Each structure stands twice: as C-alpha cells, then as structure tokens.
Image (cartoon, rainbow, N blue to C red; front, top):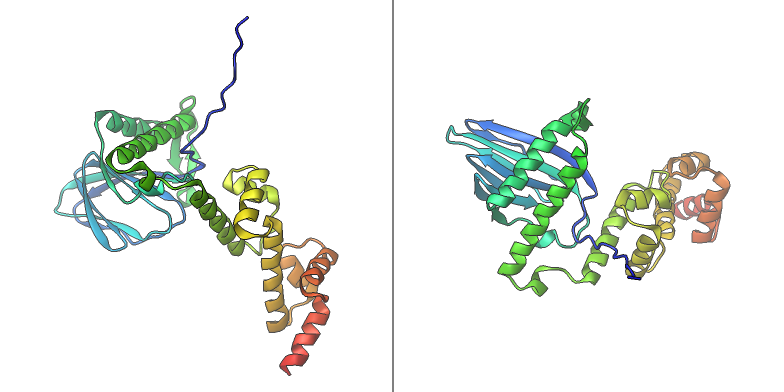
Length: 291
C-alpha cells in the first residue's frame, strides 16, 4: 500500500493584517500630506503619473508601476500637470524578512501582475468599504472568500516581485540571513513593549499582536535580548514605576493599576525582586536622598 507523507507549507511572505485598501483618484495638482506609520504600504499607479516622495526624495511612477513603502519611512504623494491620475494603495502588516529588500524600488508590472492588481482592486471593492475613522468594514453582502482572495493575490504579487529582484541581483545579498530576521523581530517586539507599558499585556496578547507562537516568540526574544519577554515587560514597567514614585505623589495603588498590575501585592513582589525593596521604601529612600 502506498504511503502518503504530509508536507508542511513554509510561508516566505505572510500578510498578518490588512489595514487599508484605498483607491486614490487625483485630478489636477494635488500634494498629499507627509505621513509615517509602522506598517507596509503598497502603491500601484492605475492611471496617469504620480510622484512619490520617500524621505523627501522624489520618484515618478507611471501607470502599471508599483512601489512598496517600508514601515516608519516618511512619504507623500504628488499629482500635477492637470492630468487625471489615480492609484490604489494597500496597507498591511507583515514581519517577513523578504519584504525589506524589495521595498523603495519601482517595479514595472507585466500583464500577469497587472491582472493580479486588478483582481485585488475588484475583490476589495466587493468586500470592504471605508467605515468610520477610515477603518475597513465588510460590506453587507461580500463575495464568498473575498478577504482570502485579496490576501492570496497580494502574497503572490509580493513573491513575484521578490523573485524578480533575486533574478536581477545576487540572492545572498538581497535576502536577509535568518539571524537578521530574528534580531529585527526582537527589536520590533521591544519597541512594542516600551510603547505599551501602561497596558495590561499578557503573553497571549503579544503573540496575537505578532501572530507567532509563544514558543517561537519567547525563544527568539530570549536569544536576542538575553531576557524573557515577560521579564523584559516587567522590567520596563518597574523602571516607569520608579520614575513615578520619585517624580509624582501618586499612590502605590494608583501607579500599580495604571501600569497594568491587577493586584498591588503582585506589583510589590515584582518591584521588590527588581530593586530589593518595596515601592514605599524605595520612595522614602529616594526622597530622603534627594533632600
């Protein structure tokens, strides 16, 4: 009897979240305001000509061309000369190590990839509409599997761009080694922890935010940072607590609650383990020292 073996699929480019799908119809001269955000933005020129400013450096894109803007990079759009110009923008979240090498480069899409973008635009119009505050809302009667169709087409498009780039350049230079990916991921997690020290974060919350398993995230962070995820989060919270104890007159209970500790006793225990004294003794000691 023939034996069948299961093969686990390895996703090289994995879209975590869709953030925005927007059709931009420019007429006349228009300059969009500069913006910076912590997610990826793909800009495809549907018609006419648009200039993209990336860190104040202008790049002109024509119809059928595409550019992938990396996170935390200042950018804006300019449409001029009275032409009727339009573009389609896709904002998404991903931690794939293969996206950065293809970012900031202009790609001229072939017919197959142009059809891929047209499918994304059509599926987006039939699946989502912009709700309050620009958030994506599913339409009342979306096409079956519309969200998955958008993701699969987008991932396929990005894979094709990565292949194109690797054909043009040395693949060993273009693509990161695994250790670079893990280091970048750990740094992103650290920034997330620092930004959210006032939140009641659990390990499940962190894993859900980054869409990786507990085992993978904990191991990656421990290897790269030399401390556990929760240990780092508590350390950051205690550092902020020390500042609040010495610079404000807020009560220990109030500080503990604002930093996401549900029980003051647990806060006291974590604080004492970190500093060797209770929050009250720490405040008295530092106040006496300053006087």
